[in-house]
Image (cartoon, rainbow, N blue to C red; front, side):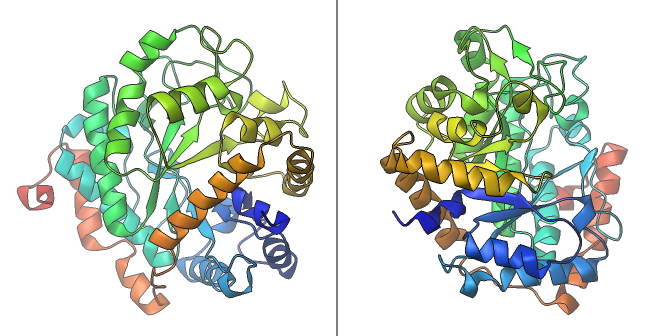
Length: 369
């Protein structure tokens, strides 16, 4: 393995609405695999399209000659990064109330179409967490519901909708964030349930999403103390290598949630978090807001590989998964010109679907897939 390839396993955040020369140099020099966009990066459609175009155009300057994953958190409802004139999608809770897989497919397909138009090729969605604890304010109406089979059915339709739009989807938060009351952005939630309960409840929607050709899954920063008393899921070989890889036979990409969240940083040194995540079985490491973290993480991961703390075979397997997904989904993905993109953003049919979901009734012509 060329050490220069390690960066393909990293996602980083950008500081503002324009790609700076310093950021472009860092992305190229370190062969970074993807970027994640937040409110600070998202201004007008014109500015955002230019930012995504500039990122897209780095592909021929990257050592891997591979396009960047350009990612966003867009679930609908409270987790909705794009402001008007982009369509303002309702929450998954509202969508779930309809009990319509056709509407779910249209929801993700139309949302994905707008993302693709502006240049975004990966959505950290859908959220397939079961709302098993009504007091869970972090998840709340981000969940489709509390019935495993129902949420699985709807999640499968959402995945198919994103795929049809040409957007990579990412189910989250494995193995389930719907029973917690502590926000993992602020501290480490600790779960009491055992493996049997987990497999008969929280895991079911993930299994349905995987069967719909889900390309990526995001881990949760939650400690399931009766399953792995030592590590939260993101850092747990039991939950990632044993449960997700071996028992569920999931073969695609696994990405961590943001490794700078306090659930981890309050309990682990910054230098050990990325190494533990990779050792546990994560393929991709997500860094969102602290711009000093990626250089540090790259350095410690490089050393851990050289010191054989992380098996080189495992790193090569992760790199293979990244390369294959990019070849399958990004390499031949056409870049949409701005003049065409603005016709897609806030399209009347998208707005009609939103109104129908909010009204609680989707017309037959919008149900057809």
